[in-house]
Length: 131
Image 1 (spheres, helix red, strand yellow):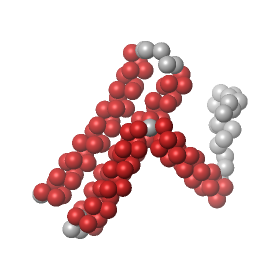
Image 2 (tube, rainbow, N blue to C red):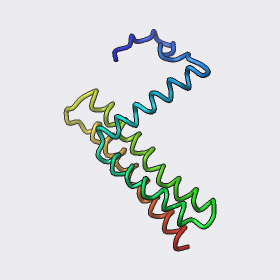
Image 3 (cartoon, one colour):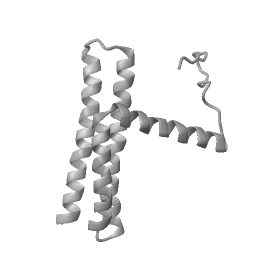
Image 4 (tube, rainbow, N blue to C red):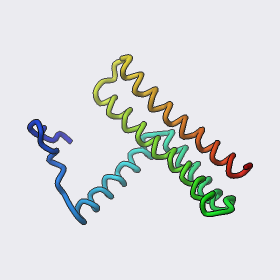
């Protein structure tokens, strides 16, 4: 999708939708993002399947609403961070597939963010279930 570049200081030509039309467009873009991630990203598929298992388990194992919410939020955070990591990787790959230290840095930082989110799941679940 090659959109014209707006003159400096102006908004994107895709901005400006309001109300229900904006919500419908946003929902469609989000759905497209989920489909793309599921189709092209092995890690997202694995984490999505993990979420399908862990979210019902959190509802079952949590004693209070707060425990359930914390456990579910930790799992959903992994999916959010993975989507952002995949978006960064796709954007960087669009710019160049060449090896470059800044590209490596961007991809490594995204990967580190996913790792922190996964460690967070383990920590939250351990504290809720064992604490």
